[in-house]
Length: 445
Image 1 (tube, rainbow, N blue to C red):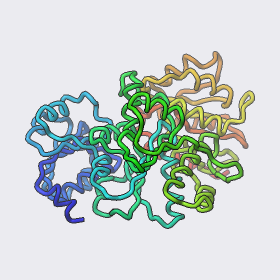
Image 2: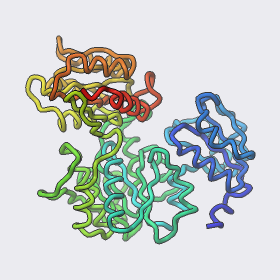
Image 3: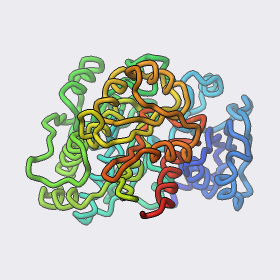
Image 4: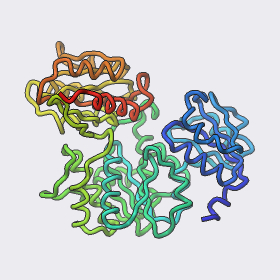
């Protein structure tokens, strides 16, 4: 694998976006160790990025431009590597394009350079669960898969050093990462697209077609012999817009009756159906997948059961950042009727989404709610029925105290915001971590 590092040795590379989730810092480590002439630039300050900067302190060849970008860092470079979520109309990227500088993203650059067999999984909801279910089946089959893409704390480019043609890499891919796949005209050999719902409209400025176009890169550039697993509706829409796909398209996706799944909710059985189709595409026997899925206990922040305290059950669904996700959680756990014994913690900041259906579902499934302050909450409050009990909170500690104020044995406290976290929390992971830690500190009785 020395040739991979040699490819970047001495190259002038600007890494746009360091962040705090571990992906940007891992890519910076990779380029620095390869001997690249690296500039790292981020809108956040050095104070905000302190944990990531500490990991890079051992490298002397990195130039940091923090607290803002500079045009000169996008000139006279061999490559720009941009983070997911960079504005598509960024003047800095436009400046680089005008000068003919290649613009890459980590997951797509990996897919373009790696000989490994790749599975790419996207969808507005469910992609993380599907990714880890496929991983569980592959591990049970002895394949020793590696994870990349939108995986917390995992940088994808360093996998170039440790994976080869016999290896399996499973990539969870959001729409932003798939922008890089479109630019490189590359798609995973096995692609999964679970569903398409309204999301990220603050970024896409209300343009669902542009959001769909980014997602479509998961399959648009497949070759004959590749496999695309999706819904009939997505297949029809993608082929109507971009023409017939070269890969084999599978839309007969289901989770067999009689198979056990510990994850609650009809949406998770749908997720497991996609994972089973991907496992079959990998040649994994159904008996192996069935045992792996039955043993799978879910992921942090996705309807994560935190246990019971004082007879009250706690679920962390912090990665619910859209109304559709919160609705799925409510339907999985709320028992219906007047109150259902469920207390919902929800709300936050807005991605230009619609909350009408969530506002109708909350009174059906939850006895009461606690809502974080934010633009999404303002929309939600305006739609809830008059007199519905919904307290306000400005912190996780306050939200949990409000939720427990009238909780009784047998009740459930569900954190499923249906909105983003910015303003009160760093991100959805910080939000979930705080909830998990506070619940862990509650007395048992």
